[in-house]
Image (cartoon, rainbow, N blue to C red):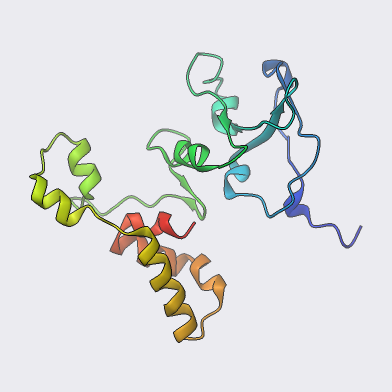
Length: 177
């Protein structure tokens, strides 16, 4: 059918249903454009409660991490953020973002979050001054920039724009998507 939009279709290539006995393909496709996470995994539902939708990471499924008691399925009925965080984790087969594989920061350059995770104790005043990225104000400023400069909305999706945001502040990259 020429009018069919493949973006809404679920893809189950590579899934081993025998390893997911309590799950099945969802009863219907999504109403809206699918999240980027589904390029890296599967959208499944509970057989006994088909309205509950879960994400299965394709890498973890292929690698059988799930079978070894590792990563579990992520409930994405209301939100895909837990699955997105899983895909963005700094581990083999992951490090993914909406545009593809995450580009590591240049050597020596660290975010405040990396410094804290590295065990360095940041003074409270410094943490409070540096660590307050206001997502809502950033979103409003980004939209105002688009409108004031007559840029198309797709500007946010260009690799050059995303790279610029990530270099300026990695928190900003996740704020728009």
